[in-house]
Length: 389
Image (cartoon, rainbow, N blue to C red; front, side):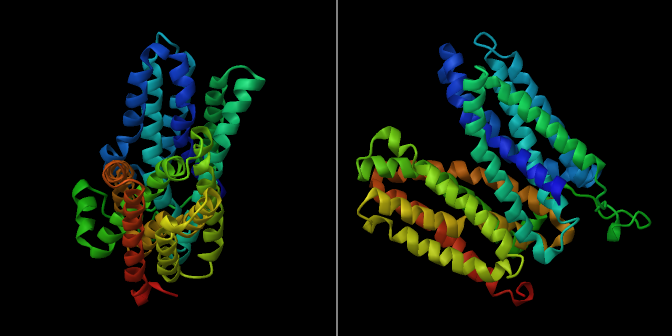
């Protein structure tokens, strides 16, 4: 498990884009506007473009090798910014495109690889543990940026640091013996299982359970992105909080998410995720519905922390329960679910529209609908008695 968790730490490097955006724009002021819209596109479009090809790649070369490919791409991504400057600003765009490619591959391949070494009933717990490690990395990135910028007067030293950490994670995984899922029963004496194909990935959507969980990922990521965007807006527009102070609001949300990921890893090891799912989402929905009735910024952030703690493990529960149901189709399932991460952009667009038309109430309703779907999905999962301990 340890080299796999190291992979989840590298997965957290995907959040580097938002963290260093201001530094890049300051260095390349003449092209700041172009960079501000090119970098997110080149970083996140890969979830839609190469998620299914990653599943096919995993089926061809093995999940472990696919993760190693992602780590190699990430190492390359961390080297490119060292050659970027105001005149060669496009190298930043290239670098973060590589970050997005590496992050997409590892998000599609690593949870599937985890199923090679973890019992199906514990998969949701271990994915939550991985999400905790990923969240720790995301929380440390701003600290590393600050330290490199102040102590060494060069914020770009963050890149060789992360490149070295990625190389260590790759060497650790490469040296770790993990059963090859391409052989039936994980034995080299058995014949290869059917390879992953594009048609096979899409065919999994014919399974109502997989389709429901994939849509659950879309709304899970959508709610996550939505809250991070909506919290400062709500603080600023409803409670008239200063813009700079309101910008710190999402920190409360992410701290609660990190704590919840660790708690989920512990709880799901003893209690089926299918049992916990409807309770967490139901209470999260009730807390979201209470947001319009809070009367102070402190009360608002308290409710937000409660919502984050209850809903943070929805991603891990959706993916873990789906793989638990169809363990032989882990490549196909993770590919579809990582592709659904683009739901963050869809919900963000809907959130902006709802806010412009209905004001703060539109924010709450949009996020509430996301969690309402997850609540319904939790009820659906809990009623599948064959999945519940």
